[in-house]
Length: 354
Image (cartoon, rainbow, N blue to C red):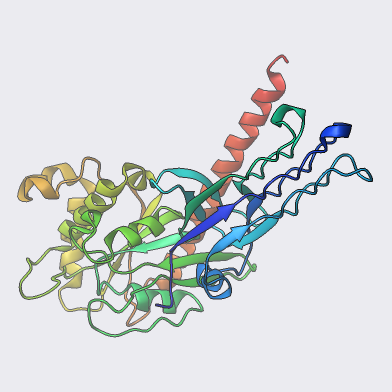
């Protein structure tokens, strides 16, 4: 497939160099294998360039009369995309790379031969690791299939997602950028449509939710007239849809529900939209009063607090400019908050007696 978000690779640090017993010479240490985060790298390009997916560092130089201390073996650097979690074979996270230039030591080289090792070199560390990609975007679009996420992305940004009226058009994450008059950009990821039961990995469930983790904020996109996946599944109102989406996020990882979230209510051009919206706003203002209408397993432990609720129509363009302004405001406020916390931490460090 075009889009890969997991790659299994073998890494091995270099073997050390031989020691020189007669003169007490030390062999060079083996080289290390490093993962280095680089822009415009994809897991797909790694797989194409290195089909065997084996990365081995150089051997340390032997100690000799000319050079008693052998040189260190050559390091091996592997360029990986931004937003990578490194997992060991048991699925435990051992590192992550989020910003360009960040490095992770994947396999350490072996020690060179010396008195301590009887002048015999040691082998380098060897292991199989998984590179797990999570997208990085400011805003992740979350919604059931057909809520109009792709249409929205193409309306607000320069992405050209394929748009069709069947439930699973978006199979892989699409990235778009909203450009503002002052040249500020906000990146938006349209993630494949979520379905009930996604947390249990039906369909693309887990792959989708993994990408949600790496967005700063969520924009839920909900069809004002409700949603029905197929004739066999139950019809859900807009209010139920919002709760179900929240529940899916929560079951996968509770922290997802604590992300700043906005709500876009789409398809406001439809006949009964206005009445439905009034009803929905009442329900959102006091969700607790309406939860008894739902089955127990649909009710999330915490309801999402929306910073803004914006009625839109991707068909007529209603509310689109307002939505862009709200996203901008929300992202700016979050950045300000992060800076504020950073400043406070620095102050504390300065005040702490050494």
